[in-house]
Image 1: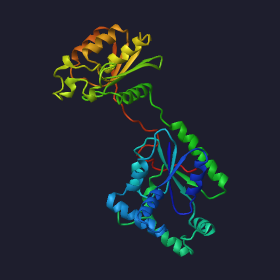
Image 2: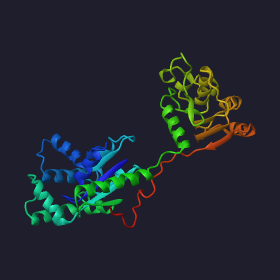
Image 3: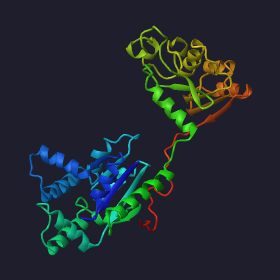
Image 4: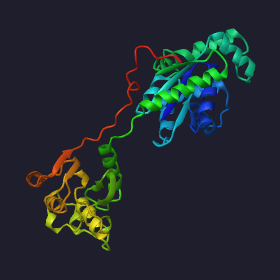
Length: 351
C-alpha cells in the first residue's frame, strides 16, 4: 500500500505522515530526493534552493524525475507514505502501482498561515502577504517543469479536511486505511502460482530460454522445476549444453539438447522425493513440448495452465485434449483496486 500526500503549506501533511509512520509505514518525501541532490552539489538547504533545484531537475530529466528516484526504492510487500507530491507527473509515476492512493490534506488559508507562524521555522514566511505570494508561486506555473501543486491536488483520490483537533485528523486517516484495505487487491490463485513460476524461471541456467513449472495440489505447491542441464552436469550457461551454446536458430538440433525441460524437472523432482502428483495442476510459463506432454499425462496431472505458447506445441495440445487433460492459457495481468485507478472520480470523497 502506498499513500501519497499532497496539499498546501501548513495543511497537515507532516502530521498525517507521522501518524502513518507510527503504524509501520515506511516514509519517503520527494523533498528527500531534492535534499540528497543539494548535498551532492554542496548547496545550502533552504526552501528557495530546493524549489529552484526541483524545477531544474524536472526541466532536465522530466517532470516526474523526483518521483522516479523514490519509486525505484519501493518494495511491493511494504507499506509506504510518500510526502511532498507537487506535480501531476509525480502522481502519474506512482499510479503505476495499483495499490497507490493520493490523499490531499486541506485546511483554510488563514489557519495554515497561523500554523506556519507558530512552528516558526527559519525559512517560513513572516507575514500573511508573503505567505500568499509563496502559495501563488507554488500553485501553478506556465513552465511545465515548475511546481504545479494545484494540478497535483486536483488528481487526489480522497480529501482529508484538517480543521479541528489532531484526533479528528487521526480518525480520518484511520478511516482511509480501513477503507483502502477493503479495496486492496490480492492476486487470484492462478496469478499467484504463475507469478511464483516466473520467479522460479530466474533460477534456470539455460542460455536459450528461461522456463519454469510449478505443480500444485489443494492450493499447495508440491514441486517446482526449471530448465537446465541435469543434476551433476555443468550448467548450460557455463557451456554444459553444446547445442544451446552453439547459439543456433530456435527449433534446430533439439534432439541433441542436454537441458531438461521445466515440466520434466518438476515431475522428476516429485518422483525423486516420493511425492504423488496425481490429480495435481501444473503451472508452466510455456506450453509443454511433446515429450513433457507425455510425462504430464502418464503422471496423472489433471490440468495444465500456461502463460506463453511453445513454438512446436500443436501435437502436444491435441494429445492433451485426447487424454482429457484440461489446458488453459493464462494472460498474467496487473489489476487495480476498484475506485483507485488512474481515472479519478468526478468528485473525491471528503473525510
